Length: 316
Image (tube, rainbow, N blue to C red):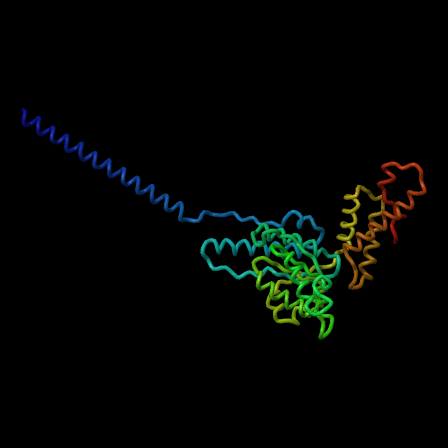
């Protein structure tokens, strides 16, 4: 009996030992599984939802749908290339410089400012401010003066956008003109400060193409063209209407139809110097002057009278 009891005890001890070993094995397996899951969790890229939209200021601009699309496409392209680079993939060498072409008053300077803010948000530029200039701000009056002026303007635009309006005028002065020196200085600084400077050249479409093609350095650095089309009748009216609302006026009945007919005639007879939104702003100011002349003859000034624009206030 004693021997049998001892034998049973040995078996029980053996079973308990085996259970302990199995428990250790299970614990070890669980630890290994946890480590594997952790590795999978950290090495597998999780889905990233990318929503890149035009900033509110750009969306609120009247018209310019093709321009908005171009800027949105550029923003998306930059963002995706940045993500590829972060993940060790090859990315394209991006050229951020642009040529804005189109007639006056189509919003080129305004969009230039918005582009600066977009580049700041994307980390391309530190400040994203815009410095606007033209030939007079770049070209000097005597030998050695041009490089000084051009460098001074560029210095003020570092970490932001240098916007050169009517840039083609830099080659309009003849063989001995200092404009070529301004171009050479600009090209050198674009290379030296390529991580701190974005340049936007603006002007009439045909003249800008001739200007860019006149210099291999310009041609190699500017390959992104964005065309600003003239505003339609409806868009011109919306610009006028926006000014009316912003300055707390309102239109008398039938003024809207008369305005649209007038804008239609203006568009039908416009030339290349037509000012688009600039024309509307000037027309609006003249309208307020006419309203002021009409009201000056009265003595009873109510809010209604001070706010209403009549047909006779329109200089048509």
